Length: 493
Image (cartoon, rainbow, N blue to C red):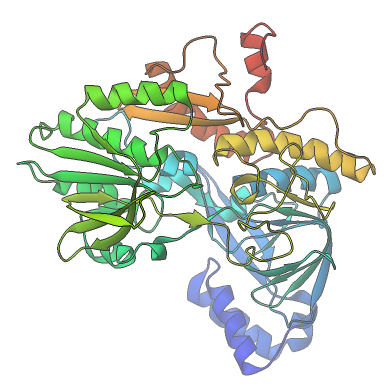
């Protein structure tokens, strides 16, 4: 690896370094250093110090930053693409297995965001749930294991025939094993006018994006006291955390009731799907909640356009030929966007026809390239895309990789599609949905989890964030399977 010294490359290097943590001072220092000490920089590459705050201490960590030409190559035993829940969990496992310097994580973001706690953030002011976006994130350098190398860049392409990843900056990473954990991308652009509405209309919000989640509570507070119409949308599947679009609706209903604003208001849940939830047991429970609270569900209504100047949302009625649309006025519009695999993955040799990493649903190993694996939302495993699924998958994938390293086929425990969706139905109440590939309940506790319970609310609110930050992304949590066995006295799955 060498340092390019042409003016354009030096400018890029300085800009990237400045985005590290000591701002302009770091930028000026390293820019001058790169000009005066080219030989030293050729071997060093550049060091950016980032300040990471925890609750009571400040950690300083060095991250090697690569500013390279397209011919630069680095080799690793394992390259992990993505620094989300699945990426960090598997990077932690692999770093412990192979040691320092043998694992690289490619992730462009500065912060790690927990979708477990982000989606309902800062929307219930009554004291039961009063969180901010800061409660849902931490610096990426604190999430990626310290003995793994963080490549702060995005993926441009993957060449599995040559075991090669190329980043957007042109760095080439050779790997012996590749773990793909890049999640899903948000496709707001597929809804005409939605991006402009999110940027300009205070009535339009989305908990799915860190850029717009702060607008949700503001839209709640601005909702007319005299009553109005609030619309919550559910797009074409698959999406991450598919229960979230209706969770926020239930919290909004609770907010209005708490603040004596519910009378005269209409709350609509317009879903692309023909059912309110994919598992019959929980669907029946949710329909009871909807009826009890006077909410309206419009099935097979897909949001296709937003005109914020008129305060109107247009929906296509799914399954009709020719297509019919219906336009509705709103005083609050919460958008759950359609989602897809990242663009670099679509059409790559790793992807299936839908664009997801083509893996065995039982073992998460690629169906063609045996040294490639996937975890989380970007995989083709046909389960609901949640952090709970990632936890269960991480244990299975660890066993699969152990077998691969021994030159064996994966055997033993297979992934059954376990996933979980804590469905918050009001402040202080949650239905804990747990199920498998066959949409059959796979519940941890020996009670009926199809009922609204305060215990499940506290499990979601107080325990799951701790579990996420301290165990899941550290590679120490494989889901509740063992506890399920114990609590059910060894019976069942």
